[in-house]
Amino acid sequence: MARIEFDSMGPSGNIYAILCLCREVLTRLEIGELASRVFNSAGSYEDALAIVREYVDLIDVRGCC
Image 1 (cartoon, rainbow, N blue to C red):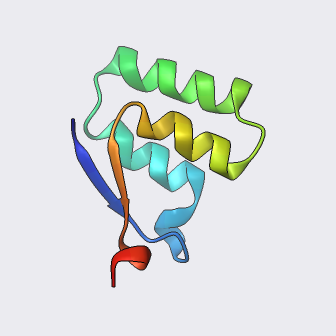
Image 2 (cartoon, rainbow, N blue to C red):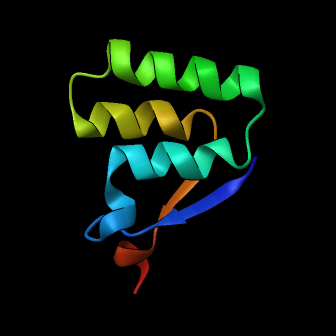
């Protein structure tokens, strides 16, 4: 599983920025499915992150330091 680091308190913490980071490591089918699930199913930021974590190992660098 690909590892993606982001800063939940910085610009990379935006869900759109996170999806862009995912796009770099996922195939076209996977990123299409992921984006669709996030925008159609997630009711909150936390829900969106939970969906993203099904596809990539999402590491919040703010939380580790």
